[in-house]
Amino acid sequence: MSKGLPTRSENYSEWYNELVKRADLAENSPVRGCMVIKPYGFSIWEKMQRAMDDMFKETGHSNAYFPLFIPKSFLSKEADHVEGFAKECAVVTHYRLMNDPNGGGVVVDPEAKLEEELIVRPTSETVIWSTYKNWIQSYRDLPLLINQWANVVRWEMRTRIFLRTTEFLWQEGHTAHATQAEAIAETEQMLDVYATFAEEWMALPVLRGVKTANERFAGAVETYCIEALMQDNKALQAGTSHFLGQNFAKAFDVKFQDKEGGLEYVWGTSWGTSTRLMGALIMAHSDDSGLVLPPKLAPIQVVIVPIYREEDQLIKISERIAGLVKELKKKGISVKFDDSDDYKPGYKFAEYELRGVPIRLAMGMRDYDNGTVEVARRDTKTKETMPFEGIVDHIAALLEEIQQSIYDKALAYREANTFKADTYEEFKEILDEKGGFIYAHWDGTPETEEKIKEETKATIRCIPLGAPEEEGVCVYSGKPSNRRVVFARAY
Image (cartoon, rainbow, N blue to C red; front, side):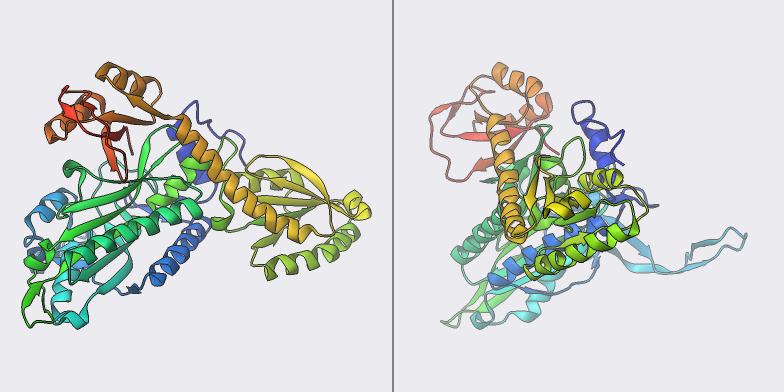
């Protein structure tokens, strides 16, 4: 199956597209810019969902669901927000079809025009804050900590599966608080949740930081983000958490009675991650042979392939493997015993390598007679023959080792591709010849940021949290700067 997969060095974009298709993760749909997530791909997303949802609930959040359609007037209430999303909105104008009198199938019924157009949600702040007005009256109703798992639509001209599609899946948290300090603490907490998920589950090291005003979420006071580096040395924004201040509370008149009896506007946050994380997972770890999946997110953590010639050999191997499968499942390890006779073992090895299964076990009659089993790692492509006795504990430990090893490799790659630039010439040279993250001084003005973007296609990915102050001069303008920010070309 992996024969003919383009290499990353030859054509990274084609490698990615082919890998998504051949590993059976997703495919393009009949609707331009949309995708069909196939069962193997969706099972990875389900594991992501489950892990994040558990983390959300640990921090006190509850799930709810809000409408897909948003009245156009709602978007008009928050000026910055509507300006940020206006060009991406899909609009519903009619509510009925009719048979074409000329026999051309169905057409929109011109008499069925909506009194007010509906927007297919690009994000749910407006409809949720209009609802919160009914839910919040007193300080006793706060904090209100809600998350939604849903789909959204943002009309995209240039699309790529998982990374940028017209419709995608995501979660969006929306919270309301009595004080500014509580809302900021929530925003920072959820950024930490995202970073922890990325690093501990996706094995993906991330930078934590704050977006510049130019890159800030439409309608937010402050946007926090996590940024990851892909193997083509482009950055990918892996999650955002927004401090909304009182902007949406004022737009939708969401007030609460405080302990002293006064009326105050609540303070808000919103935060989200999406199926873009699937793209990050693929691009950060996979190789020219296929997917490399961290064990925590792999749908199949261990695959066992019997090697046999006669039916009685398969029966013997299967009897020995049955107990192993049972013991692995007891430890919560997902395992597949592939005894199908559709393909030869070599084909199966290549197929499971393509799909990124972390551990492959193989047993032939020689192994059966010697009381051994062959153990192959997907991440390093190494294999060894191990005693069958005690193999369950070895596999459990090996899965943890692989998870850490994949993270360590990604971190080493990021560190090797992180640079400092002190002049604009050096900055451009690094961008064109190496790429990666570039720490450089910036004078803090939107004008300089925009000029650099126009001339180099590099953006400020974030102002790193906790970055030390360092006196210097902006690489572009030469004006004073007191800290470096992170630039990169990005998805």
